[in-house]
Image (cartoon, rainbow, N blue to C red; front, side, top):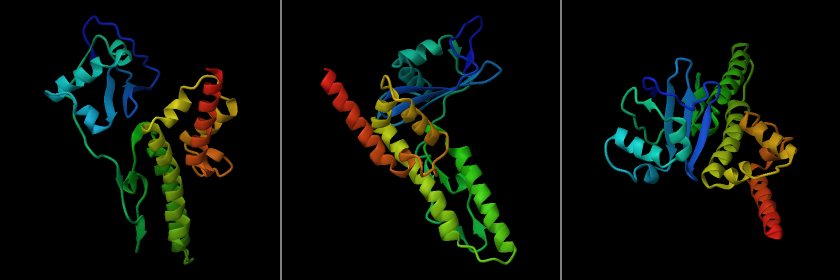
Length: 225
C-alpha cells in the first residue's frame, strides 16, 4: 500500500507491527523507507473466506473489521490488487541423503508469525557446512543425529509456540499485565531464536511451561475476582 496524495498515515516507519485480528488471525504491517507499506492477513481460512468479492474487496472488508489497522492505514491506497496464498507452510520427510542436504526454507517453511526463517536458515547452514567439511576430510558423520535430529528439536519448539499462538494460550501470556521479568526474558529468548537452549524451561518443556503459567495466571485472576 502507498499513501494517497496529501494524506497522513499513522504508520511508524521504524517499526514492524503485528496486530491480533482474531485469536487465529493476525495482520502484519511492514513499512518501507519510501513510504509504502506491506500489509497482509495470516490465519484460519474459514475466517479469511467469510467475506465475499474480489481479493481487493475482501481485503478492504477484513481491514474495516480491525479498528487499529484501519486507523493506522487511513489514507493509504493499494499499489496492486492483493494476492492470496493458501497452505504455504511446508515440511519434508527427510533433511539429508546421499551427497545432499536441505537447509533453510528448502527444508522447512513454518508459519511466519514469529519470523523464524532467518534463524533456521542460519543454524541449518552453519551446522550442515561443518558436517560437510568433516566428510570432505574423510571423517564419518552422523547426519541423523548431528543434523536432522538437532534441527527438528528446534523446529518442534518453535512449532509449539505457533500452535499456542493460534489456540490463544500464548496471546494470553503476551497481554497479561505485570508479567515477571524473568518470564518475559525466557519467552522472548525463545522467539528470538534460542530454541536449543535447554537451560530455558520454555525450551526444555515448552508446551508444559506455557500451560502451567496460564494455569497459575487463571488461579490468580480467580482469587482476585
